[in-house]
Length: 279
Image (tube, rainbow, N blue to C red; front, side):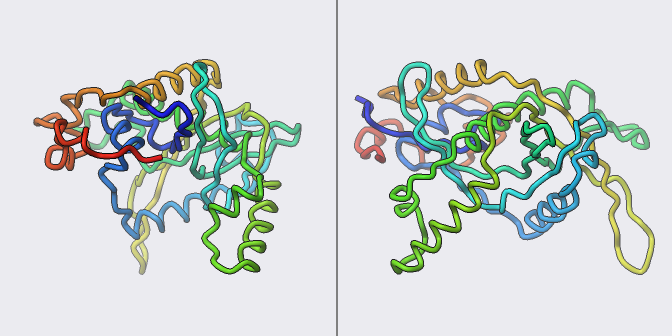
């Protein structure tokens, strides 16, 4: 039986392109296909985030006046939250950018280096408007999860002590104080604006250095926390089952497989019952 007192730790990024089988193994047994981040990806992410700091009008003229602030590229934990069925969970993650509007409202922005339009210069480009809509729909839960995280940041010193990487007492106290100072800056009420900025290389700029021109497009999301909590309740309900759901055909095997290649090699349903669940 699942532990009724367990507090699930949920990563916002896990809610995009959800595979419930993979989520079950990760959250209950610590089994997952760990990706490796390339250095160039991190460099591009940093350049994109820095570019959009300051006036949010740089993202879109449709946004109200406000300032894009840097959430410190630091992972934060939420307080213990409850889904619609009373299950406990925390959110652990970091967003790309937070907007503080002059009227006191807040927004969450995520940057995706991803194609968002058809390249008219290429006859073979089959990108369609519905492809962009599909991406927006898939990333939608991730943005809502960030809103829930930054509007419920954990400030308990004992919890922050347990999650601190510092070793010595003085260093731990200092790290907690620094974390609390940052929380004061990035903490928000529930976000009233959620949006994705899709960024994609457009062309090469000529010169004595290789330069790449990136174009971007802002896609606003409808804020619907009720629907998101329904999704979270379904998500946690599946994690709370005694047995994992089956491997989806598009995730675990075959030509349509998109991710989780390792499950084709290490997953054995018969052996799973001999493993202990993680706390």
